[in-house]
Length: 323
Image (cartoon, rainbow, N blue to C red; front, side):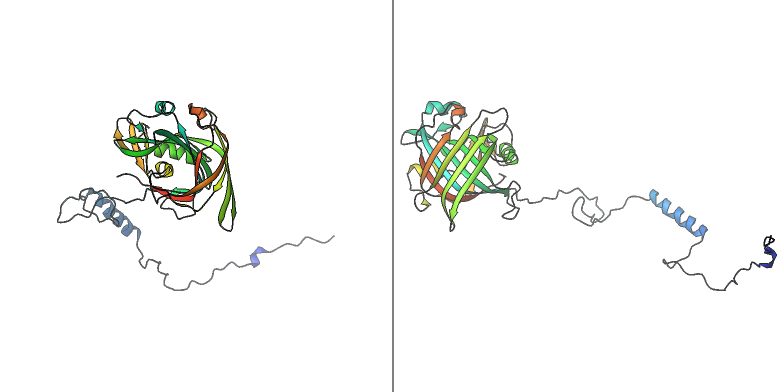
């Protein structure tokens, strides 16, 4: 049996490499400080807390302005001009009008409003169209937070101190966000509805439109609108004195909402008014078939029989905050 190998550790020598006499590398700051120097600098810095406050120059105009001539600066308010207008782009618009007994409309109006009449009759109208865009005007065209949706409104025609306007009895929108925004900002009675708008368009010309709306908001009476319509002529400005001009060329709307809004002005106790900025309507006679309409029935308003109808290819309107 072979004997085990024994290592003689005494044969290894542990030596260190010779120390070179080189200058230590300087720090990136370019300054080498001893411990005593660092402590001295820290003491000087802490003593600055006892110094009196001095005017300081800010890098922007928000807050206080720089002091001048040793005077204490005063706070200043920075006014920012913001474009708060709301833009709506609609297309394939149906106007459908019915004469209605004043006794059916009067209970729904604020006391400060009087019914406006055309040829001795009060009127109620249903508008149906596609909202292609609904956005703040500051956003570029084509960028709508809600996307396209259908909208059906029921309105009547009123005056306040001789000024003509409209009073919205209901507004059904195919978007929850849009309905809530209109009700909060415009004071309109808005409800969410399931809507579809099918537009038959050929070579850039609308031939016919199929509109469907069914109110789906909980706690509200059911209301449905089904209509098929299209233009029967070339759009033009409404003839002065006609029923079309009486119904379509109105820029003010009145509301009895109790909530203040930047888009509304108070004109009487419990009455506010807003105004729409848009070009004059261009309308044409319409071929319209209203298959079902229960918008008025929910309010006790009879909208029976074939309506007087107009068609408009579309509009772009803006509502600006009143200053």
